[in-house]
Length: 219
Image (cartoon, rainbow, N blue to C red; front, side, top):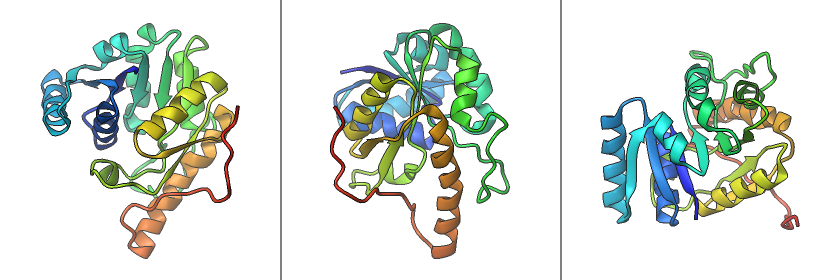
């Protein structure tokens, strides 16, 4: 099992994923700018799942982790990734960022780099194994014990790193799917704004995606 350090782990998505991974047997470090906030979330997850979850700073979580997961909003992406860059070399960094620009979050607004994932790779440098995933799942559903009917599209230029994150999605009770190169992340990032629109228009409680067809696991 891996040691997973979640940067921005006190947010809804980070805490929800952290809880599911801890339940699956991974060692989880909840990172935050506020140690007290991280410890509060970690203690709640520890009590709920009967495991040890640790609360610490973002930098410490990234330093101690085998796999770093960044769950911060787009507005904080540059600052948080710059903070951990020095300890991320050689590691997998899973970036979950969706480039939402309030107040028009139902409108696709990809950054000049083409996607938040490519932006993350540029910020972190070539020594970091960047993977992009977890864009289309509703955090409030992940935070429950219920089964979440949502597939997770996983993108990376590093096939081995991508396979590891596909397995992490499975460990979280979802279905991870290889979705190709990192640049393809633009499709999932853009789709999030569409899902938000669907939620509002059709009064859906957290729309997600599922891929049809009989998918055969790649070798």
